[in-house]
Structures are given as C-alpha cells and as structure tokens.
Length: 227
Image (cartoon, rainbow, N blue to C red; front, side, top):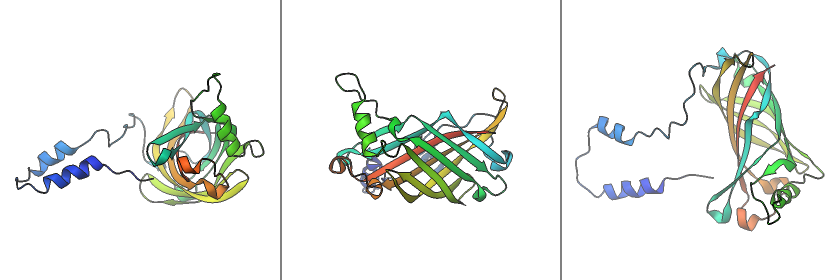
C-alpha cells in the first residue's frame, strides 16, 4: 500500500506556473516543517542507542503491544482491525543487532474489529477468524530467520509466518524506539515497531477479495522486558 499527498502535488503544480521569487531558504524550511511528520518524541531517559540495552533474553509485554492489520476497502479507505492476544520473546544482541532473533504467537480467534451485530455480539470477528482457519489452526506464528541492519535505528527482519496451516517467508521493516530501565518493574525495557505487507491468498485466505483486495498491511508495536 502506498501513500501520496495529492494536495501537496496539486499545489506544487499550480505554483510552478507563477513567476514569483522564491522565499529565503530559512523561511521555506520554517513554513514547511511539520511537527506531525516527526511523530511522537521519546521521553527523557530513553536511549536510542542499542548498545545501552542489556544483551540476552526478553519477553514481550503483551499489555503494551499491538498487532494491527489494514486492508483497502473497495480500493478506497483503509479498514483497520487488530488481534487482542499476542505473546512473544526476543533474544537481543546490542553489540551485533543482526544476531538478534524474535518469535511471536497470536491467537487467531482474537481478531477484533470493534463491530457488533444487532444482537450485540462479535459475529463478524468470528467470520474473519474462520477465514484464518482458526478452528483447525488456532495460532498465527512468526519466527525470525535473519536480520539486517539498515540504519542506526532500523533494519529488516526476515522470517516465517504461519497461519491457516501454511508457512511462507515475510520481511518486516523494523524500527528500534529505544530502551530504559523502568524502576517500577525493576527491569530494562526496550521498544520496537514493525511493518510488512502480505498477500493473504498466498496463505489460502481468499474471502472477500472483491471487496478488500489481496494485500494486508500489518503494523506491530511492542515493548520487551528483560528476563
């Protein structure tokens, strides 16, 4: 799925026909800077340097993790839902992050759209879980096989994704959001996010293709606690 700022493109096209002098560089930078584009800043005390985090085993904090998926409804708006139940583990090597590994398990029947039927029940969620093959294959699993560092806080994680009884490779774009010692827990905590796009038909899930298409974007945010 690709995002484009059409309004900006149209504005630039219109401005290209004018002969007005360009504003000073400083003025241009200040007028176009966007605090939204920068995202939510990390709090004080958070280190973005992976070397500051202890090496070893970590466990996913399921209360501070989310697995969200999005599909393009009728080729238009992005329809968003999530899974409520997820667990996982991480082996972190700050000296050589490419040696790190991660695994995660999601309950296939924990899909949550937030939609209720006329009886106030989550019938649509159950339909989606059935399409995922949740009855015969209750868990969706990801196991990393390799990692590649692409920047100071980013990388690519390649692994096997299993659901609906089938396993195929996927690659996650991963971002390290930093770590800190959390006094309340008495342990070090590190945060990551991940993103990938899959074609669900490759896993044998073809329901509603005419309405939502084949591509599914998966967005992951997670905190891991040092064991």
